[in-house]
Every structure is written in C-alpha cells, then in structure tokens.
Amino acid sequence: MTLSEQKKALACAVQAARAAGKLMRQNLFAVKKINVSSAHDIKLELDVRCQKLIETVLYRKFPRVALLGEEGVAGDPNSAERWVVDPIDGTVNFTYGIPHACVSIALQVQNPGNPRQKTSALDYETVVGVVYDPFCDELWTAIRGQPARLNGKIIRVSERKTLGEAIVSIGFAKSPANLKRTLPYFNKLVGRVRKVRMMGAAALALTYVASGRFDAYIERGIRLWDIAAGGLIVESAGGEFWREPVAGEDAYRLLASNGRLRKKLQSLG
Ligand code: IPD
Image (cartoon, rainbow, N blue to C red; front, side, top):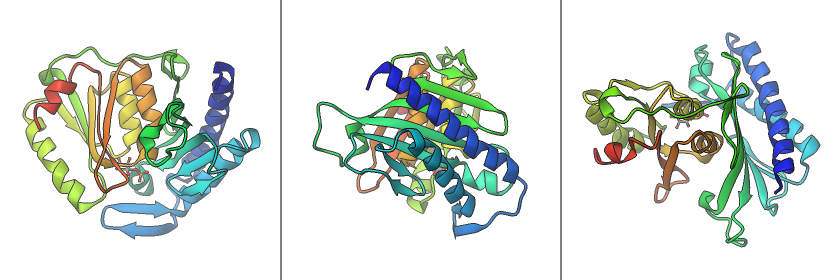
C-alpha cells in the first residue's frame, strides 16, 4: 500500500470515527438499550449502530477491504487488507454516563512474507490507526513510519525511567480467569509506582501512553479491536507495544510502555 493510499485510508477512518463519536456524544446521558449484559460486560444497541455507521463511511471509499469489528465482520474475507474496528471502546463507562470512551479504527495489511496464513492477528501489520475521544474532542492518528499525532500535533511517549515516578494503567478484562490473573499486577504495582490507574477504555489507555500521560498500560485477555489502532499510535510515538497471544483464547497479553519501563515491569512477573 502506498503512502498516498494510506493517507486516503486515514482520512476516511477519521471521518468514520468522528461520525460514530457524534452519535456517542448525543447519547451519553440517554437511556441506552442493552443487547447483552454479563457479569463484567455490556453490549449496547448503540455499539451496533456505531459500527454500522463506521462501515457505511469506510465502504463508500474502500468497498473491497475486509472488516473485523467487535460487532461482527463485513466485506471480502479474501482481501489482503482489513479494517479492525471497536465502535465504542469503554462501553461500560459509556453506558453509565462516564465520558471516558472512544472509537478505535485500524487498517491492517497481511504480512507480505506470509500470504496464505490468516489465522493469527500477528499475520497482519497495522498501517493506519485512529482513536477518537468524542467527549474531549481528542483525535489520535498514526500512519506506520510517520510520527503519531494528537489533534494534528506530533506526540511522544514520556521519558520517565523509574517505577517510582510512573503512572501505570491496568485493564481488567471480562473473564473471571483473566480478572484473577490481573489482580496480582495491581498488588505488586500499587506500592511501587506513583499511581495505578484503571480507567476502563483500553484504546484510550494506549493513546495516553503515546501522549506521555501514562508511562505504561497492562492488560491480560484483551481483544484485537481494542488495541490495533492504539498499538500503532504508541509505536509511532516512540513507545513499545509488546503483546503475545493468550493460549486457547482469541486474546492477548499486553504491555505497552514508553520503552524505558518494560523490563522493570516484566521483572515483577
Ligand atoms: C473493553 C475496554 C476495557 C478493557 C476490556 C475491553 P469494550 O472494551 O477497553 O477497558 O479492559 O478488555 O474489552 O468492551 O468497552 O469495547
């Protein structure tokens, strides 16, 4: 994909993210229709409406690209390119009227060295990422190989080197098993770092790392649509986006950081 095609894709993803973000803003305090509710998760009818809106905008300009979204798949599954979409990241916050949620859209291309395999997300590379927070009107964008931007201005990760001065954010995923495995991170970190934060929108946590607001973000059991766009934004801001698939789950262990703290965090276990 050429740079000019990537720029076109970025512009289209920005348009789609802003359209879905507007719908989120209009509905923050509305009574929302819940499609599915479980112990630690909620799926809204608005998740589906936002994804449909995003699809409509993306497919006007890119009719042949596949789409993998939290609310289902679309497009041509044989395409070597795919959009990865979380229409509302931070759905529980949004449902409760907490204005900390966003739209996340990534464009991925199949790794050229691996043309037949499409089984793992690691077979794809994110080339364009957009995360939009409609409540703060903050738009993060990245194209692989170019600097990451927030509302058009170049951003960099923090330079903090010690855990003692770091803010580390932790995501608590949805399954009881992952919740149980995540709790020890909290216990190990809380006395060592300046602050632990748990804000409930993984894509925003990643963009906060990219912007130098957080120094690291940790989650176990996170899905691809939560991290594809934000991961590229972290890397394009000079940070590290370390992840590995969790065996037997369609999910990842994630440690995104400013690059200076990864080893220290990993040594905590
Ligand atoms: C969730 C949020 C949450 C994270 C979960 C995600 P959703 O995404 O990003 O912060 O801890 O793992 O699934 O369901 O609100 O799109």
